[in-house]
Image 1 (tube, one colour):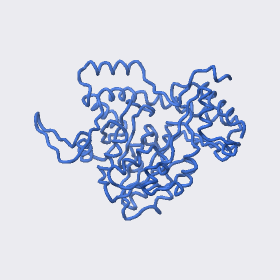
Image 2: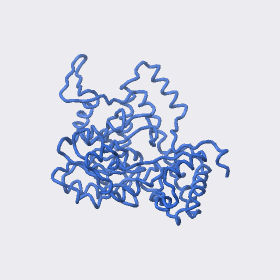
Image 3: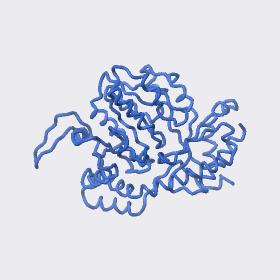
Image 4: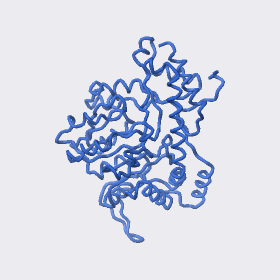
Amino acid sequence: MNHSNLPFLPFTKPTIDEATISAVGDVLRSGWITNGPKCLELEKSLSDYFGGRTVRCFANGSATMEIALRVANIGPGDEVITTPMSWVSTSNVILAVGARPIFVDIDPRTRNLNLELIEAAITPQTKAIMPVYLSGLPVDMVRLYQIAHQYKLRVVEDAAQALGSSWLGDTIGSANHFPSDLVSFSFQANKNLTTIEGGCLVMNNEIEAILAQKLRIQGVTRTGLDGMEVDVLGGKHNLTDVNAVIGIHQLKQLPDLMQQRQTLATHYFDCFEKTTLIEQGLELPPKDFTNSNWHMFQVVLPIEKLHQLGMNRATVMQKLKDMNIGTGVHYPLINDFKLYRELGYNSNQTPIAQRVGSAILTLPLFPLMTSYDVERVVHALQLVLKEI
């Protein structure tokens, strides 16, 4: 296989069909292009998808988490337990409301927040738990909510990557067989459902939804034709109808897109099992085809062996790029960033996350890929790691 003669394969690429493109044109021609009827339609469709729960859409997935914290009355002096293995927005929004993130180490297999370590991290200041479902794989939802209820904590689920994921047969966000609190989803460009930028928050009742709506647009409440009141400090986080109409079409396609992801992930496992890479120390993700939505396919490189050869993750990524294969890093450790170090955090406090964060690599996985693309990625990675 001559990789240099093949087209560049990105690690992700959205699936946008002609019907969606046409629908965007219809919205642009309608004259109503900001938050309006299409946003309401998307919220209704998402509410149906989540079993009738209350849903509001926002400009991005970071806004949904920050507003979720505000709805839960999390603020200065409070602590929120979370994982250091996530996009930095997870903890940034905790800081934004004046609270303090408390980083708990991850489970080495799932790479998610280790629920068995949570209780030891709870203090009188702890007000919430914010788990992250890395690559779309949830934590044990029953155990999560057992802990939350025992210690009377709110749960803000960072389900940014988990639209379509499930637990005990329930779609994450619907929660018929386990309790659920506030659930935040992202619709950013690389997500399983995209609105280009956007997100939604699943809430418990209309009281929470009314507060979220106020926080979404400057704290404003409108009555009648000319009535306007502001009784809470809000921001500017509304989703436009241009974005919303993309989400409406994406939601209709979601089952098919998820099936394609699962097929590709299955082929990844089949291909890797025919190599010696696992014996060489390459760690594959959990082989979960029941709960995960396969948002990403991530491997953990045998980083110590690479270091012995004077290589690192960046070396591997560059070699793959030279073969026209794109990769990603999801994620560098949050508590290793300068901002967090200056706040007193230390990645040595989460050693498993520290190791995984230095070695995790996101491989291409998106519905437009073919089985040949998967074989190409595995073959290229085998060539790169042949020396170890």
